[in-house]
Length: 387
Length: 193
Image (cartoon, rainbow over all chains, first blue to last red):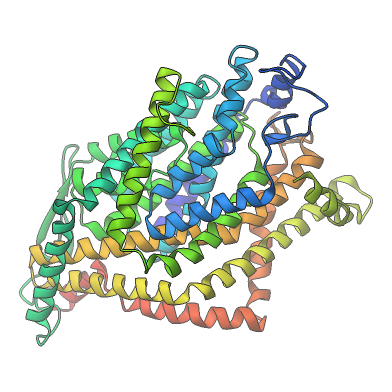
């Protein structure tokens, strides 16, 4: 199984690399320099002062923060990753858009140089993806080693994912202005807020309690019995039937099935959203696979990790090599320092705060950010301050 | 940020002037830079791991115990208990997953500074791909050499006492992971029967 996984992964990466390199256009080289050169020179709004101190991506006069500030924001993101989960990726985006002032700076070029405006949008998207996606790469390897993948499903997801993650950068890079991007980012934050909110409701809490009770009851009932008592079965792991509309398989006589079309469509849609917004997509894959495809939950985790990885590699390579989107590597590196420090602090501090209250806090924060960004993006102003 | 690069520049660029042949110097210098990135990354991930060891162990224990319970439930053909235990195993997995995402940043952060520095020196350098007419920039070359540097450092790492200690702990985890039952165990069990 592991050899197969590595083989398929290797082939996928090679295909993504080759496609990216073959499709890359040398004419895009120096895209940022060209955009800067075409921007009116001066100290006014929407102008670039060549004498100013270089900031984001080395652009003279662009926002630049003290190195420690990036690290501190990274600590906040890392702390969220290790104590709440998916919301860390969103917070990474909030840092780039609002805290570091990149959105307002990019918007200042809306009339004077729309190309630079859109290039900054793309760069923010790729910076977000780097922060979440590259870290996911390393953790994904761990799950493959644990052998928790359903290969037919992973292939369906990866197939759709590669397409989505390739098409979105190709179709949208250089075309999305910052206002639209912020608006859509706000909508995705709403979706995350919804998931977090459900987990804090009595229904969400009850579901976990029920699961605990059922697991405990089974454990108690079987504690004195020998494990693996299905002596009459001869099924093991078997694929019962293959088809374009349904794949049926059994684990020790218990039947599971999925429609192979859904993982392809789901993989495509989720990878497309992830590439568009600039997130990893793990927070969408897991509920999709458990609720829509209805797969055994423990398998979902490893499978979704592979799907995130494949679509993330495709997306980043397409942005960087096919569309030549520049990124600020030093900024991402500084934030990564903070992220791992925050991840160390998370477990140490979160034991003092009940998980449910932590999630409620982030629901409020997500609503604030979601409403703020959606109104700012689509109405032109934020109804909340600080956005 | 520029100040940081200026102070590191004279040190790093010295590795790019070892032979006097531009192309060879580029590859040697980039390999040394990649190697330094690998070493710093391995050091920081090991420190991060040692500091979070207790939490990681706790999460892993939870994950393994619920996973095993779910497999036992499956073997007993109790779908309801299986789903319940699987849900809890998945919750435990989710917490581990996001924590590992955060911690893995400790391994890759130096590469971004390395690439950022290379960008100040080699952003205009393109290498032709033979027989294609296409060119690539310095990033793919850095990535390839980084992978190479990782495999060069791997055997060296296993001889350094500090990393030996960390590896011992990791081996213990691998043993624990082996105690986690998988669906393949069910299949094997069935075959034996």
